[in-house]
Image 1 (tube, helix red, strand yellow):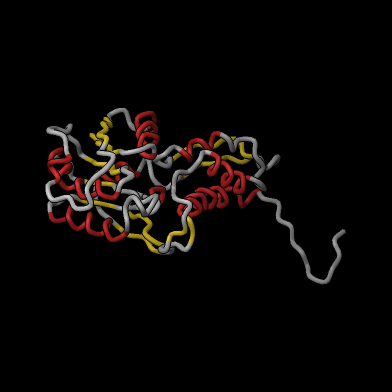
Image 2: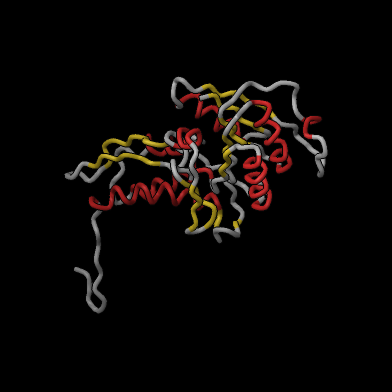
Length: 253
């Protein structure tokens, strides 16, 4: 699969580096750095695009400037791309109204588009858009990407005697590489502490999602991202945790 990543700051390069390092061998990932500033109204997108861009099957819109979204349909035409992933890890970079417009513009030219909020809600069939709300999609290019990068999915092995994590395999990494970072540091951690430790490691990476309160979630996107990883770990270690039960009105031994 041929991927073109649109970047404009420090957010995109981390994703590109991780995808290049850990994606399938038959993927190629090219980069176009968008302009650092754009006018409020873009009448002629071609004035802000290069003369040529490499052919692509999938576009990753990893820009940090909202106006760049208006260039994406023309980039899709130039590259021949049939699918776009435009993650929302910070609503300043892609406001919800603009995300809706982008999906509409691309649909009119036959290009599939998903806008996972945050990026690590993307699976092979749907993605998050708000609390308890997921949006289904049906596109083979996006699904192929999401098999490897999107909503983190680890496979943990816990020793039933010591109740410690003995192995942590990454089935699906976050596009930024956070899940791989966390998995490498969970080995040896007690089942009692694994979920909390996963959350701390997620923040230490650090996650690049916004720390502002998001109206669709009533929480920060960084916390939403961290909870996705914590919940995956918590589910797997639950059978091995030592549970403490407290009976009201009694004294502990």
